[in-house]
Every structure is written in structure tokens, then in C-alpha cells.
Image (cartoon, rainbow over all chains, first blue to last red; front, side, top):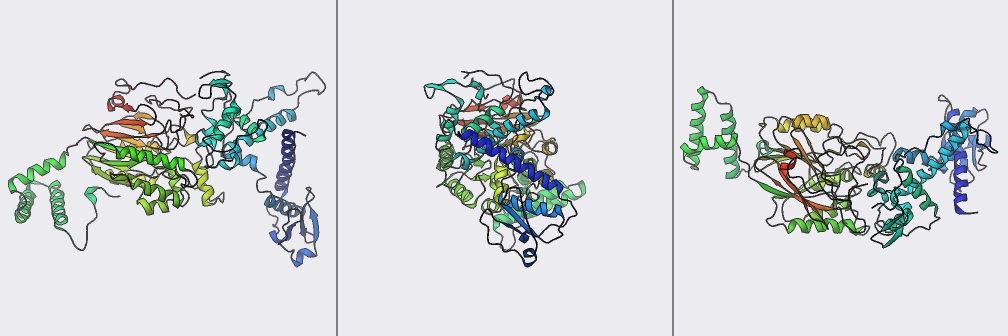
Length: 240
Length: 381
């Protein structure tokens, strides 16, 4: 299976997990008592330092839908409390679970095109009519790739910089990256380059890292972010 | 913190010079409150103290000095600037260190030497003690006296503790050759970190990201505005003012904090003065503006150039050429400022690897009608 598909699948998996998180947090009532963290234990990630308390030992084990995260609760614990302590444990094990929302809060992303006008229209072939769900899926997926690019763009570590330099230090919000002008004859290099060549040039020189392979998910994501941020600019290849 | 007129009283041993300056100040204070009846009393006291110390002949002392105090003569003078060096420690990134050293060489080779070198803020990249100490060490080799200003990159790891240890208070004022100079800390942000439970380093990194939307807009803040009003109190409106702020003291582009949230309030305090020039760092580019009587000039960075903001660029701005990434240090530089008797200033933007650009005071004074510098053909996309 090609790398990109693996990435896509893992994003989809993450999407499911996120949906579960939001369900669980909605379900948890405000007045319900929270279980102490000591009652939660995990079997998945090797965290064996916490011993279940005596009270918990006599309780019921509940397993999260990931098949790994587990809490032990006393009999009669309200379901909402069980759910919230399960999710608290899951989030503890997955601190970056909310990466997408956090990245978008830090760094504004231009919204992808609005396709809501297509809802209810015939697709013309097998799929029947375009649904709201379709439109939402397209938007979520494409913006997720661009958001992943934003995370790389803004991180010297993700870029593999040896001098703690990231793209945003010269290109806030991907300004002055002008992807709409590629391909062009890059006079300093004496040849025609694509946007990805210039991304790699920057990674090698100002950033002082290793250039990325053309199909590297990081490079694909960087391209997606840079193109997303120049929404509305007209293509003008070869422009200097 | 205090201007020359409000300097603290020296206690303990007082030198002959200090005693003389105190006597002189008391006399001038009394002269300001003169009415006909007390005139003879004060002038007799002046006569007495001066004659007793045998300094000047009594008949020439009083009128000459009163005239001098009321209408101080402004001598033209030059200062140099260095700004926005964003130092990491030397072992991590030597490029920014070398750039600051290039700027120090530039100002040290100026002939004649500038009266002082003004540092425009963001000496460090992440406000770490070793970054600030490295910067302080490099700036020690500047031959002229150095005046410091703080930037957000210096501040938000330890909320300015290390910076204040090294360089003193972030806001202060001084008089230089008849011009009153004020230095502000314009990078005060509202607390966005407590509620988010950010560590000091996470807070610092949030502020260090120019396009990071989690942080708050910059401001001077009510406390410093009150200090500024107090500092300018009693100064005649003919006093030429130079104000230094890290962020531009106007509202250019909020998403990058090319912005000071209470700029209008600060401008209102400066409004009554006939001539005000504001110099700022932070924007890493040639940036010129004028709002009423207030002229604004931006400093170049030694570390890297920022692109021009996509909106809000002041019409008077003379853009520097689009920097060439293949030409290291292009778009970076330092500069010098000559302040003239009219209180306005010419700025020479010493763009490394390019011809320096002079923006004459007549350019902003004429709202861009006169002496427009040549604009480069390749501007930002």
C-alpha cells in the first residue's frame, strides 16, 4: 500500500477517535462526580506504575472501544462518569488527539472552496445525489491535509532543521511563497523548478535540513498548505 | 526612568558638581514661579549663591540661563540602530550571531561615530538567559553608548526578568541635545497563557510565532500610558520628541501583530507636540508612515526580512526590494538616523548587499510629494 494511503487511513482512524471524544465529552454531565485518576488504568501503553486502589479492585472493568483503554469503577457508578473517566484516560495517552483544532487555532487556514451549492444535485453516475455529508467530508479531508502542512510549516523539528529555523520565520501565513508562479525558470539555479523544488531548496539551505522525497507525506502536506493559503490568486506560471 | 530634570537626589557624599547642579535647579524652579514681588528675593538669592561660589559674574548669569532654559537649542546629531537579531545560542545557530556581529562592525566603522546606538528589541529568539547574555556580550563591543529596547522575543519566557537584570527598566526617557527621547515597552500582551495552562516555554513559543493567533495583540498598557503622560507633563509643545517602540505605534496588520492595540491612546498623548518621530522594530522591513504630526520609520532586522503585510500598508511606505533567498542576509541590515534642528530625522536604511536607501525628513514632511526615494522594481508578491 502506498504511503499516502496509509496516511489517509490513519487520518480516518483519528477522525473516528475524535468523534468518540466529542460524544463522550458531550455525554458527561456537569454535575456528575469525576472519578479520581487513580481508578483509571491502561493495558495498552505499558503504564503499569499505577496500582488499582482497593475500592477499584472490587469494581467493574470497563473497556473503551479502542480495545485497550480500560478503567475499573465501583458498582453503581453512573454511566456518564464511566465514559468521562475512560476518555480522560484515552486523552492522557493521546495528548495530540486534538491536534487539528489546536493547529487551526494557532495558525489561520484559508477555508477550502464552498461546495454547499451542489447539495441535492445529481452526480450523474452511480452515486445518486450529492449530500450534505459528502460536502462536509470533502471539506474536512482537504482542510485536514492543509492543516497537517501548517503543522510542519511552523515546526523546525518537523522540518528536521539543525538550526531551529522553520518556514513561518520568513513566510508568516505562507506569505511570499507565491506557488501560483511555478513552474518557472529559477535564474539562481539555471533551470525550471516546481514549487516542491523550492520547498526542498529552503529545507536544505535556510532551514539546514534534509530534502524530502517527492512523495513524502510532509512534502505533500506542505504543498497543500502553501497552495491553500494563496487561495484566490490566479495562476501565472513563469512569473518573476 | 526619569528625565534629566527629575533625576533623583543624591544622598550621602555630594560632589561639588552635584551641589552646583542642585543649586542651579532650585534657582530655575524658583524663576518659573516668579512674580514681581518675589523677583528681587530670588535674584538676590541667585546673586548670593553664584557670587559666593565665584562661578560667573552675576550680571550675565541670570538672563542668559533663563533664555536657555526656555528655548533650548537643538544641535543636529546622528544615532545608529541595530534591531531584531533573534539570537539562538551560538552552538545551535551561528548565522544570526554572525549577522549581529556584522551590524556591530557596521556601527563601529561609522566615521564620525554616532552619538549612541539604539537597539530596537528582539535581541533573543526565545528569551533564554544564554541568548540574552550572548547578545549583551556582543553589544559590549559597540564603541558608542548603547540604548536598549525590549521586544516580545526577549520577554515572554520569564516575563522580562533576565532582560531587566541585564539592561534595566524597559521604559525610560532621556534628553539628548535638546530632543526628548522616550523608550516604551509596546509588547504588553493580555494573559492568554494561564487559562491554557501553558508552560513558560510554550508561552514564549506562542508569542514568537508571528502568525500565531493564540496570542493577544500588543499594547503599551494603561500603566505605561500614565507614565508617558507624566514624563511629558510640563514639556512645551515645541520640544522635539523621539519615541522608540518595538511594535509600530499604529494599527497596520493585526494577524501579525504589526499593531499596537492602544496606539490611538498613545498617539493622543503625543498629539500636542509639533514634531514627533517614532522609530520601531518588529516589522523587519522598510516601513514609513505619517499620522498627523507623528512620523514613523521601521528598522531593518539583522536576522531575516518579513514580507509586507497583505493589507494596511501605509501609502508613504517605500518598499525595500523583494529579498533574494539565494543571497544570504539580503533584506537584512542596520541603519543610521540624523536628527535635525526642526526635530525631524533622515533615516539611512543600510540594506546589506544592496545600495543604502535614504528616506529624507522632507519626504514625510511633504506627505511624499518631495524627495521620494527610488522604489525597487521587484516588490513583494
